[in-house]
Image (tube, rainbow, N blue to C red):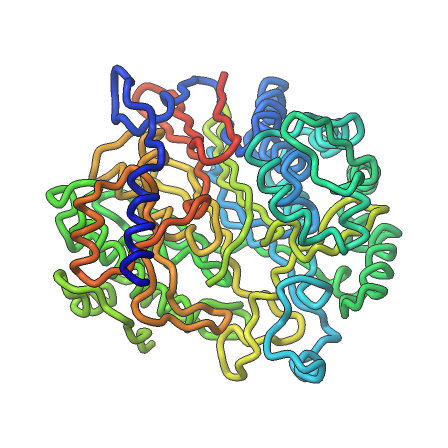
Length: 564
């Protein structure tokens, strides 16, 4: 039976359609050329959001203004992935001060819910869906915190495109329609979800015009009254009353006390490029840990797509994710050794555990299997400001809890806590859960080089590392780096409490040679295939010499990069 399963997987991999083969330049897996422009660039996972943000740039807004508009529109047109019921993280390059700024706009758990309250319900973990998984949404506060520091246009102007799309409707795009339909049946027992997102008992199909007048009203209140409407006003009181009726422990005080935090991005140099991530409670430093280990190998000689490269990458990922499972959590509750974890010294120690000929079943965490749906976007303006922004409600439609009077789904980030007492990421009141969503940035010689992100739960640090390696080691351009076939290792220990067994599985995207698959299996790797498992990618690169921007958006999403 095991042999037959392996043969079936290999058959699927080899018979899946590959990328276009008839391009006159570049790699054959590239889906399109890079977008090139002088005055500004936007890259998002949905063309309507890209165009709305581009219009903000044309009207004199800056990159941060345009990013807020893009995110607000994405909350309307890609509601299964993001929206005002979720959290936000961003890295901003400010052209005036020539510095990077990090924003953590993630929410916290309820004051009034204890770990004993959860266990008293007979639970061994926080449920994935439903009211217990809801933490305070940080997105709206994140918008206003970004705007207060860097914005130039009025918030009402920035939110108006999203209000218009919610009120007047928009045609649902292909990938979004597919994802929406895939989860609609699971959530149709949630009356609020059905009324808002499946009004006729089913999800909208590709090209159907979808309207969300309740969300238009909610966004209008936020635009008129500011973030206080969401965290202190009547809208907040209505949300709390609704959530309490659903069984949530969130209170008015949880919303009133919510704050976003400016944080210092952290970096590691990879072959001359400084790669920047945000510190925990997110998982960004896992990408830096992976790159620090990979830097010790001659990947260029191994070659892109080789079994040698995929093996080393997978083992480096396993090592980093064991530390991720042990250490990554809310830094206000733990002393997290971030500097040591991303140091070259530590990477040298960890690298010694790798056997180049054999896959490891497991690695110990250093001494010192979740999924998700997310949007990533990036914007750059004529003055040189750039923003890398990621926002999510975690799973498709988050907790599934939707107030039909407000028109959005609340996130289920609280599910990421573990109930294992003594763990860095154990559940505690007013605590931020471990987070998967991470924006990234690259500088070179102290100047901005690239703003990028890869969506997709635990895929994100793996994706970040692969993008950097594709460009630095394998010489790919910005579009090719995202279009290149990816791998995703699944099975590592997780901050939620799940454990790695038997070395996990390498999930291979179509386009990987059969000989490579065989070579990986000989090293002891289990091989699998997972449609939709490889994330989506957007990026902007700045060419300082010619004063132009390059933009890219991969074909795994409905996205678009556009400039002017």
